[in-house]
Image 1 (cartoon, one colour):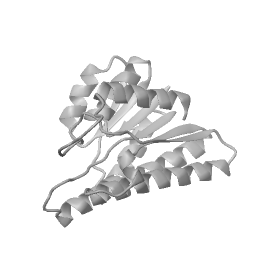
Image 2 (cartoon, rainbow, N blue to C red):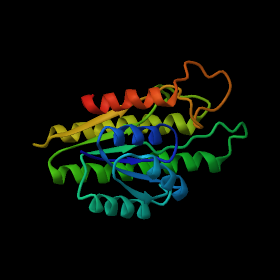
Image 3 (spheres, one colour):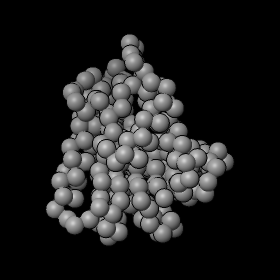
Length: 209
């Protein structure tokens, strides 16, 4: 089995890459920081492929993902885990737009490429890591809204697969608070260790739920 994890340099994505590699998957790992991809490669027990990409640059990210899929001769699973968010009390427009650029535009590009890849293969599994923040708005306005977009987009992809004679699965993962750099602010509750969250996500991937 082969899988690509978009956003694998830290947090849940990094732990998931290590978990899937240890389970025998050939993994493709992507992220903005090449040095973190290099360090992750050294931790993986099975073969991996690396690709540096910044989802704020759509055209380059699309090119990088397509090139990675080509080098891997196709994959069975694409996990879209990359995401950003801000709780800056100053609420600057620049940070809100950065969130939209990655979590909406970047996500859409990756999900669309994944969909077409699996339609061509006549099978595969698209996994999007959204958040319970998708359920309701909050002070991190763009973050919550972007996660709601992700979940609805994934539901739309699922609807599209039903009209085709293929074997494509779509999974919307909505974690709660996980002990990573993304879990910012005061009063965070029920914060799960990143290892536990990665195991639960991997279990859902295996079950195609």
